[in-house]
Amino acid sequence: THLVLDMPVGRTAKVRTAQEARELSHGLLAVAQTFGITARVLVGNGDQPVGRGIGPALEARDVLAVLQCHPDAPADLRERATQLAGALLELAGVAATDAGAALAMSVLNDGRAWRKFQRICEAQGGMREPPVSLHKRSLRAPASGRLAEIDNRKIGRLAKLAGAPDDKAAGVELLTRVGQNVTVGQELCVVHADTPGELDYALAYAATHDDIFRIESA
Image (cartoon, rainbow, N blue to C red; front, side, top):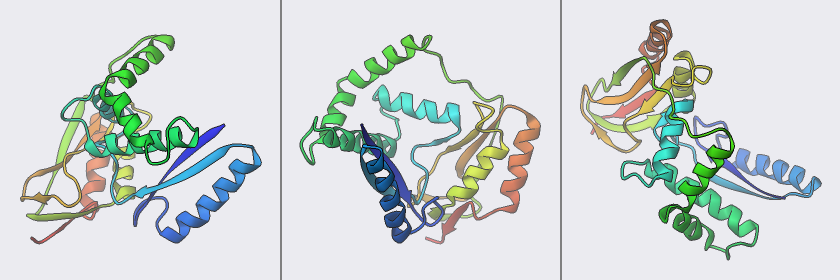
């Protein structure tokens, strides 16, 4: 009956401009209305991936860290999740306008979200730990400076060549965020794969696409 759509917008995101976002939002909301669904589109920053993991198990670890309120949980994922949940609470009339995100954050902080997640897992056969990759290799900064951009499409391609999403443990683990200063040789990300061959495919792609991470001189 109620639906919130997350729409990241950025130069290398699926939706690249504000105009495209407006046009797509209009179409999606029209379809929702036709089916009697109360919907809202939440446009967000798509300049870089949300969270650290790209790939099923790596993303699951991010989610678990947020649900468990771990101090090292990705702050951007925590923020975006509570924004989306809050928007849905407002849309459904559970929270007042502009009060949804705070309500969602309180449910997260007091452990209710984690307890509910555990019950959902139990109802679906039990809680399991996400698998761990057998092979991994770091990509390192070729120079010192400011990380100006992460190419979403190319980092997604890198994860696929490593085996994701078919190989659940495969993917890319980001270690830096746009805007951070890095030094030459610093780890930018870790590529995870289940086989040496898939890891080699991914690394060969990275070697010929040095613009996955764009570093500007400080």
